[in-house]
Length: 117
Image (tube, rainbow, N blue to C red; front, side):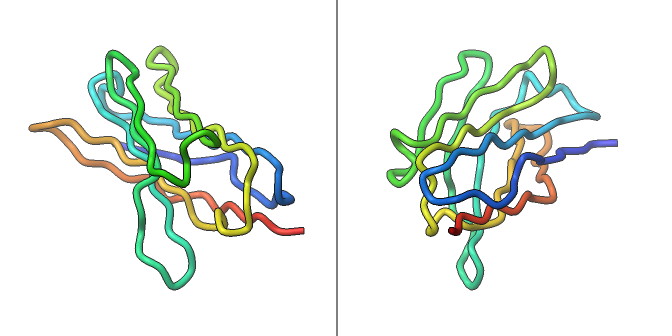
């Protein structure tokens, strides 16, 4: 059974940090590119970051550059999104997506991040 499970969200003050995790099971995680997205209330889901495999090359949307860092541990079938200097506008549900050409396209259930004082 394919699963992607995000965790690590929560309430944090502006300027704080969170690390999100995306734990995979039921497929060969090391073959899949991982993307992070987020969806704020009343807004469309938007791309945040990507981390490829096996090189681990990353790319980020402009608002994430310099603040967010995507990583992965293929041995543990887990991807991470380290988020620093969080702002109220980063409040959203964060999702991970695993995709491989000719294979599956999987989504997690999301984890809520709330940035508020």
